[in-house]
Amino acid sequence: MEFAELIKTPRVDGVVLHRPFMPTVEGTLCLTGHHLILSSRQDNTEELWLLHANIDSIEKRFVGSLGTIIVKCKDLRVIQLDIPGMEECLNIANSIEALSTLDSVSLMYPFFYRPLFEVIEDGWQLFVAEESFKDLESMTDEWRLSEVNKDFRVCPSYPSFLTVPKDIDDESLCKAASFRHGGRFPVLSYYHKKNGMVMMRAAQPLIGTNGRRCKEDEKLINATLCAGKRGYIIDTRTIAVAQQAKARGGGFEQEANYPQWRRIHKAIERSNVLQDSLIKLVEACNDQSHSMDRWLSKLEASNWQSNVKEILTTACLAAQCIDREGASVLVHGTEGTDSTLQVTSLAQIILDPTCRTIRGFEALIEREWLQAGHPFQQRCAQSAYSNGKPRSEAPVFLLFLDCVWQILRQFPCSFQFNENLLIMLFEHAYASQFGTFLGNCVAERVKLQLSQKTVSLWSWVNRPQELQRFLNPLYEPNNLVIWPSVAPQSLLLWEGVFLRWNRSTKCLDEACQEMVHIIEYNKELQNKVNSLRRQLAQLETEDGPLQTP
Image 1 (cartoon, rainbow, N blue to C red):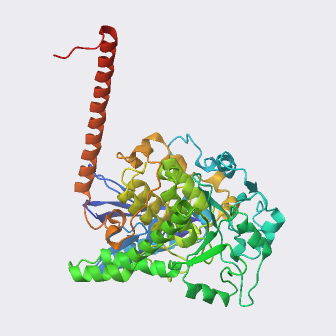
Image 2 (image 1 turned 60 degrees about the vertical axis):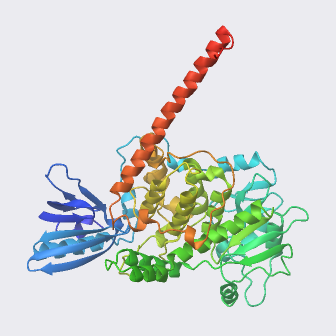
């Protein structure tokens, strides 16, 4: 298919662009296969380059011969285009709708994007399982790297290499996989260096109404326990939901078959409920009624903050079991690709200071989201403004980023990165020139040949000139476990995402800039003090102790 077939009117002059907190611009609107571009000859005006993939929905309005298109984006931005001529407006609108809803992944912009920057470090090669396993090997010899899934047949949503207990052979892994939803048998997620406890993740066991069991599965998770120790199974579903799953062939671990494990049920919402929560939250944030009661009731009705609280609470529970109880943990929900990953990744941020550095956080997202099989292509196909009927869309990754922001806000000196990195990841998960978030699992990315045909997001982020934007000036390395508060009073609305297009951040940006200047000036003064101390020490060495009157 040629993009030209979908573009009925490629160019219109005299289009007026309205954007939040920016001056109105008049210029020429151009449509390409992947971008909506508005260019102006006015001095000091910024061009608009909007990826069609970033467009969630559009609305058309007409007053006489003047047409208006309201473009609602997946990054929650809303822009307005005033287009002279009804026919031109209709053609532009129809073209945008067609170009923003292409189903073929291979027609998406990352396959056509050619970077203008030099790729110093290939992001596709940064986080390979073999290298990560070397770090684990330096701490323990109880695990091995299995290639049982090298052709993705045992579990289509797992990567080729998986870390499993050393005493469990591949044949047992295959039998355990047949007992877990989607073949997602228990694998290592995190090793706690402090006490040797581990966190594993999986999908629900296929118990069914007949109470099926699998001795290989029981042996697999028991192999993670030290002698005389108990473990915790954290099921991210309520007991009622887990019971209902039995009727569909799923279920949960029976105490009689897993006597060394204590099961705990939590209440993290399913993906379809989360999408509705996001839609209601964004609607509340865009409400211009200025009524306090209306705002608070809409915010509460969205349940977004309740979802944040429940996810953080469950992650803290997992971290507490590992660090304070000295127990290993297995986390799963139904499929093991959504709430499970939220919990395992947040628990690691709480426990492991490495995950609070930029490179460590990138590795965490690769390991616990991209390689662990979170279906980004499905979950991020629509955002809060889409008119289409939701299929598999859900803001699972956005909720994870929101939880990270909550912890970052409570521990502002313990993270090497700032809020900008989290916002950037949210934007690129929904629409990007990079191939990192395309596909739903490693198998799909291999089939699409993303590492050969597209550029990795990490190749761009890790360039020194880009990294500066994501560095936290308050960062002081903290090797301790950090325990975030999950009290309702401690959890705030993430304004940097949900209110950034509704009110200006100019004053906040200026305050942040001033803070950076103060910190830099403080470092200069500290260097001068250190230099003077060295000079004084040198003088005392040469002349003997100075006599003070």
